Image (cartoon, rainbow over all chains, first blue to last red; front, side, top):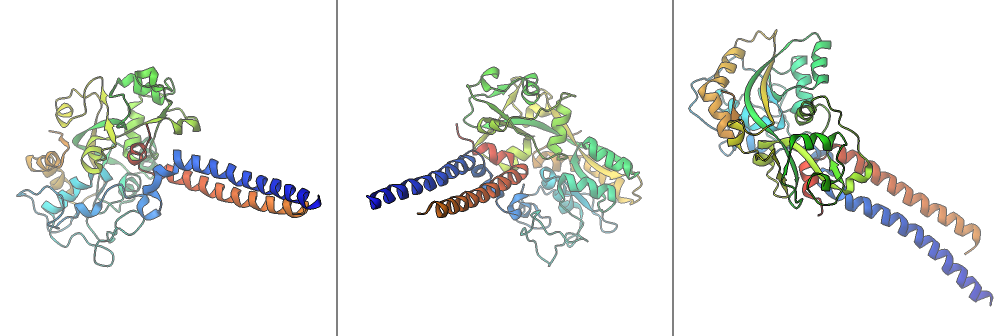
Length: 335
Length: 46
């Protein structure tokens, strides 16, 4: 009797222990299934910030995917340090490739490596850098970069310059569509501008309210200070982007980006860009002005920068040659 | 198993599971804040 009773107790105890493990396992698997699995490309610090494959856009490398023209401008001295956003690396790397002499782009250790947090190892004396938007704005204000190629700054970035007593000059050099995208299997293909503002301000929380299926909307935002998040803040025209319930992570997501970055550089077939007000964000619709959300991108420099090559390079970027590079890269020229 | 032993074992297992879960959550929150939203939305199930 004692043995049977002991065995029953042991079975009960083991069952309880197994139940504890099972509860935690189900909880963690749920988190994995809904969230962690979708972050697999960010598992390490090394891959975390690889927004683009910088190796594909290295100047003076015949295998790089850069626009090459017979440039009338060749700079040989007082070379400006060019830096910029991930989405604009193909543009300003092409400027370097077409205008700067070989040897102006250098790497720590002598050769390119993307085995670090930011995915590049440009040497401190390299005339091309890639700090992306957030660090890039700090670099232009602090004077370690001469020209930054970026979207419009955030309020914080403007304040950072003001606090440091630095005046920045913003020269628009091209246009780009600000696009919204969803998973390719989301039945929604088109939203109005007001519907998107309603989604991000918390007015609409279910896709069925905007013509989709009965599923919670997960409005995804970006890192504060990134070019696309600053563009999104401007798009909202003063409406507050509301926080969302953690349960929204289980819903159907909507995100935002710039057209060429998304379509031309990342090229993920599992997502689709939405038409806005029934206009698809094609290069043609951005150029002819029918797409409703168009953002300018800029060449930005310090007003007190006395390098004589700044006006020379800016004029060339705005000339037929510079604009041709912008257009052939995949963006829309400003002229 | 003695009741005292069982309690100790249960606490140890709960503790290990909690540590694992907290590490998982911290990682998920950190990675979510820095992830590619294009990839994140592309991996969504419909």
